[in-house]
Image (cartoon, rainbow, N blue to C red; front, side, top):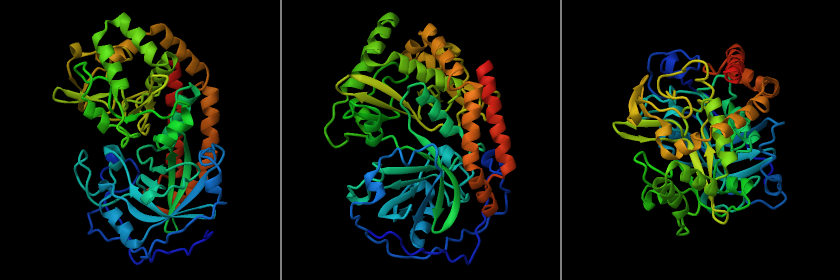
Length: 468
């Protein structure tokens, strides 16, 4: 095993500074300049080596708790050949992998796959294209969310029992705390959720900034959280569509993130949806309790609504009369025949607690309420459909007493002012120097003052959520 590799330096012969849209969109403090011709990064080219581990490497012999240790701020180093990095930078939204190297605490994993990642929100203000809803163009921000694929080209060895690493840029979160705090609150309420910590990231020897290292929801996540771990994991497909009917079998197969190549059955989630569709309200409650842990799903709803995860499963976005939700996963336990809803993408959580932060994500209704006789309606800058018009969500919303009980448990426990202040202060002390370092190196990084202001705002939002 090669314990160290030659550091390939970037020959900084030119400086790239291209526009960040407006402060309203970018929200990173960068100034809008005149557009300049894109100049590719001049990082040195090299052949990515094949490094075969000898077996005693730390990353092969410890588990993922080391990577997601809340007490540590790890640094990860990526090496990417110059031509490959240029390919990534010229079209990040293509989300195409290039080959590179991961260096961590003296061990080198090579080759690995590396790419930028994101949905619409991840690219806001950071690509040269001018269509917010159709991201395109070259990279204009220092940080973009990245994915590192350890199981590249059939690699069997895991990295601390993980197959992928996800570094989230937090470009829309000045506090840099939304993901870590939100997922932590879900887990404190006994709702399975990805682990999230902060991490420093270097690319070709250059410190890029502080990222949220958030656990990939895949079969490794399933094995970590569920004993009944051979079931199907789905991304962003609901048991029922807007019209109250299950989707087609192929639609569920297309949404699979595990068991894709094993001729799986999707009858558990689809049959659950059909049973809900065929039943009256009181019977639906019995069906939900048969196929779900009722304390878990009501706790999920309590956390989601209290932190205003408005860009999650309870926001049904509409184009015409076609409405759908996103930013969630489902896992089904095959032996226990239980379904679990899993939260995802908390970047915009907390922002709408006191006032609406933007015109797109805010949900118009309180939990359990509906608007416009369950027809799509315009709210601020977008059209939406009331979540409680979905008969599954309506069933959950009918548990008034349990919802109130779980909300008291959240507010008196993990979300109490004393507890959240302690966690926020602890994590802030951990990342302060990394934020200051990024600001010294990059014009579009938050200043310490901007960050501290955002942290204070987050505390105020939490206090408001507790008292209201």
